[in-house]
Image (cartoon, rainbow, N blue to C red; front, top):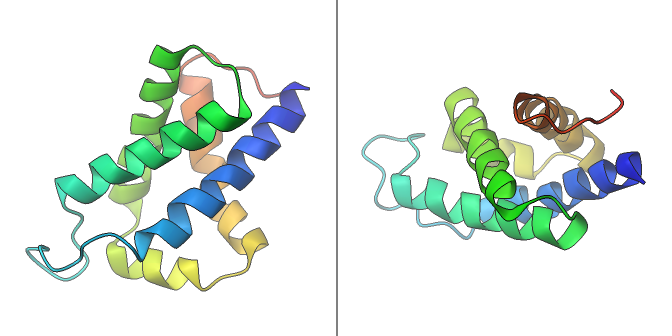
Length: 114
């Protein structure tokens, strides 16, 4: 069940995070490829909703994990990278998102059997 929950969580993130990046407002960027705080906040909310719909983790922990994921993702990838990743296959996107999510889950003591 734990592994299934983690897989569903990651798949949910892929559906929520990557396609939703296109809907975020890119006009307020200071420089091409920079994430705005508004974009990060919107992504955190979408990640929280994705985790809540697939898992029964404590809501405070969900917020911490979501913020961790968004912070690590936006530190590693620019908006331009996100646009390119949005055009990748689901498997390629999972290869990008999964290590970040697993690192955040481990950071907050959620065991994943990986």
